[in-house]
Image (cartoon, rainbow, N blue to C red; front, side, top):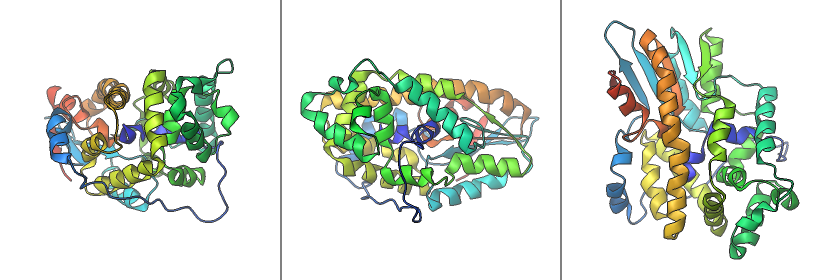
Length: 329
């Protein structure tokens, strides 16, 4: 799932791999896919995954403790996304603790350390990893990764899960992050630090890398083939996801992604597997680690918006744990 790949550690790994012109930050562009044909049927098939699909900021209550807040983030530096983060951050003042996926805020050295760790796991000196990509798609995949700033010879020795994550990020957003523009999670962590509020992480960088590395070569190869077949589609999905995020309905990207790209059944299965690996398993860990903070009250918890939705999402998990979770906007 292209939208599921907007995870904070992904951009950190590529900071040192791309060159960015000295001019101002590039603007991202893309077509709006929110009205493509077939959405009604796709929504119906994904009904369980679209529970709590609307909403970014939720209040979490339990008798006897101060309310906490749950905010869905997006891995973006776009001004419209930062504006929503600024609005949500009004609830940070006076909070006891702020929790993001990885904590922070991270300086350039910390980001470089994470990037180095990711590259260390991704590097395979002994094998040509692109041999796992079907021969008919290989040259297109080579061009796709080259457009992200990776030398072709180097790409042949990077594990496919890394290449799938890397190429999911639109080149415009990669370049914006390389200019150290803050994305939403970083902005929230910086705001908390400025307010004197403790910031903690719900995961470690190693745990996120563990999740990435569970993506099988066959799954990653299928995702790369889809992306290489229509590189502009990545920009379109990103633009649509950002639009939906600003409208507080981020999960609508899931059925949209189901009906675009002219995917085969095997490629759609790979997309579903990618979503399962990167969302569902991590949801359980995030909910478990958030609960002690919520028991004390006064917590502000910010994680990727798609971690909130669905029967396995954080909103439903917290409700099952006895909390009243109410959408604010």
